[in-house]
Amino acid sequence: MKTIIVACGAGVATSTLICDRVQKLLSSQHIQANIIQCTLGDISRYVDQANVIVTSMKVDRSYSIPIVLGISFITGVGVEQTEKEILESLS
Amino acid sequence: MDFIVSVFDYISGLGATVMIPIIIAIVGLVFRLSIGKAIRAGVLVGIGFVGLNLVLNLIWDYVGPVTTILIEKFDLNLSVVDAGWPAAAGVAFATKVGAVIIPFIIIVNFLMLLTKQTKTVNIDIWNYWHFAFSGAIIMSITNSFWYGLLGAAGHAIIALKIADVSAERVQKEIGIPGISIPQGFAITTVPIYMLLDKVYDRIPGFKNRKIDSAAINQKLGIFGEPFMIGLFLGILIGLVVGYDVKQTIELGVAMAALMLLLPRMVKVIMEGLVPISDGAKAFLEKRFKGSEFYIGLDSAVTLGHSTTITIGILLIPITLLLAMIIPLNTTLPFGDLAATAFFIAMATPIHRGDFFRTLISGTIVMAIILMLASYFAPVITETAMNTGFDFPEGATDITALSAGNLVAYVFSLFAKLKIVGVFLIVAFVAAVLFFFRKPSTSGNTN
Image 1 (tube, chains in turn cyan, green):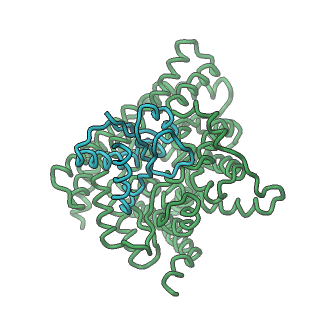
Image 2 (cartoon, helix red, strand yellow):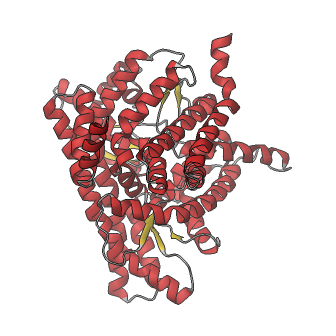
Image 3 (spheres, chains in turn cyan, purple):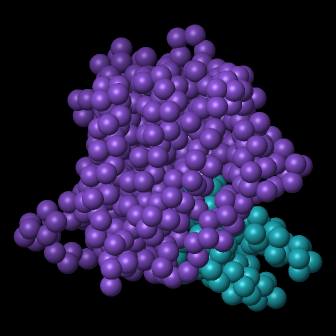
């Protein structure tokens, strides 16, 4: 099964919103996947077991797996593009 | 009108665990949720508060006794425990002002947009707690719900204005167009960081100092998880106060538990707020959409900067040290040590990612915050008690570093003057609007 990391500043508020959107996207595409919700600092801990990272902010560091900026889920601008990026990284 | 007020008084008199689900469900219905979804949202938020209350007991059971020892044995006047932003937000939302804060701030934002006083559409519903906090403080001092609401509106208006002013810099530095940051705490630090930046410009040797914060960041990686900070701090404090091995580890695990569980409870509250946040967003977006508006987001969007992350970690020991040496401080920093990066969220964009400037500014601001958090401790504790959080007999006072913002402080000083203070608050907000009038009017006049 695929695994998605969803990260924000405190791993609580904004990421809960993004998780909700990612979950809806997955179920609409009939994809089964784990979602790990965490803080920005925790990403490196989960990278080895995940396929893609979705964050609420631009991140300076690069990881071994693709990282998608999920801010459109909050602003509502460019949601389709973000969804496409997430789905591509899972395929 | 009197009838509405008395119904409202009755509901809020039932205590947070009853009032909050009811009010949130009503707010949900206002934003066109179905009855089932509205009730679900209300109950989830209520569950979050019950959880917060349960977890906060760890503070009184384990952290409280430590403060007594610190005072007796080391003459350190750290009598107040920093319970962190989850507790402060919980208390703020659980007050009468907090109960109506979501629709209320949306109305304030709506009117500000309509009168072209702001370009920011603040869709960061969760962080309305900062405005609720300012309102709750004023309500507590003046005993007036209406003055409380006025204070919340004042804080929100200042937040929108400062968000407008800092929008361009924020967009450039973090690389996301069309946004601004009206987060209630972050905006209060913007004038401080802007002022300090001007000061640094005049000091020789303060220009263009580059440092690779990403490399330091890698080395500091062990501090990543908040509960490890809690464990480490608990064991350290246990050793300092002379606990035996069992007590020391017990304190470590209890503090680790607090760090992990408090935010988890907020997550439950947040899950309840998601559909309401969506409704509020849809309401505002339908009316104010397009390139002439900024989307107001949480200050967390700036936290991806490696300077912010690294200095956020460095601020943990710095804050503990400051707590011991600042004379006016009575707060034992704890809960918000897991969120130190938030305090410098605006410093990095204003200092253009400069490491030393951000570090020095961060230290100065933490010192101010410690004093303000200590100042707010009695009123936060009293408000928490009044809203139905169970305080055991003789419990330690609580506060939160994230509550120590300058706007709430200035308002609270004004509020002590009662009706005169109300005029002063209005005058203060008007002055801020006037001082920052340029950025938003320039769009209309040309």
